Length: 348
Image (tube, rainbow, N blue to C red; front, side, top):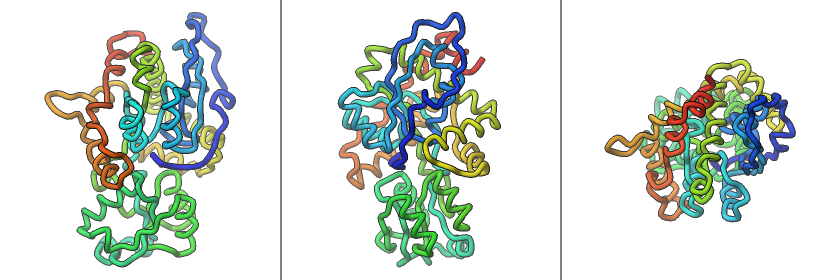
């Protein structure tokens, strides 16, 4: 997702890494790209804290990027091998740099939201047409703009009937807090700031209108071809983090708080728990099911079709490839077929 300009120190420097088991294999350096203080990156932080990299024979070298576009652009120089990014950068990377998506990091649909003030939201729900001529604060050509488009379609309101004001997320929060705008298009964790400090509530999210916003676990195609075993071990580590998060809610909240604070983001415990509740994550078997093409497009393919059409419409990605060209379940199936990797990925 196109988001945030916060910087963070390398995960390894902030870790409380567990000691390596005696049977750990020799470590191989792996260049990993990420963004700071994002929920989808949390499994990488957990892996560092828990010592899982060493168990898979990986020495992680993290590169932190302030947002998706520069992260994807760095792939052209081969400065990273694998990573986590948002859905829009994932499509951009597939179109320009042969980036492959090997798993879904999380479903961000419920955290890309049009927010309204609490004292106005019921009136808007009862009569969406009342939004005509009103100012909507949005970061254009991003996933929350994709949500806006789909919400407007649901309400039968042409975009031209609104006053769409293009602002970055920090500017939206500042303007909305002073009474500007009828709606604010925000993503996490900004939605929690709006809820807790501005008495705002969700009006329409991607989840509400089937505008699915998945996150991407990615790899450079060249690196995948040359190092399929390493990529499988990397993904197994990420999935181990997913398994931990599903089984250990309180510990996940604590780890998330450490990770967010290291990235310069301070939110309440209620917001951290809301992140977990609103952003579904998928273990190994669920990932395989999402990616399965049993005689037709996979569930994940269908998620990306709508987003790709939007990105082409607004000119962010010219002629985006079909999702089947860059979404691959090869690495997931490689893990599932290896008893050791499968058990590790599932936290068994």
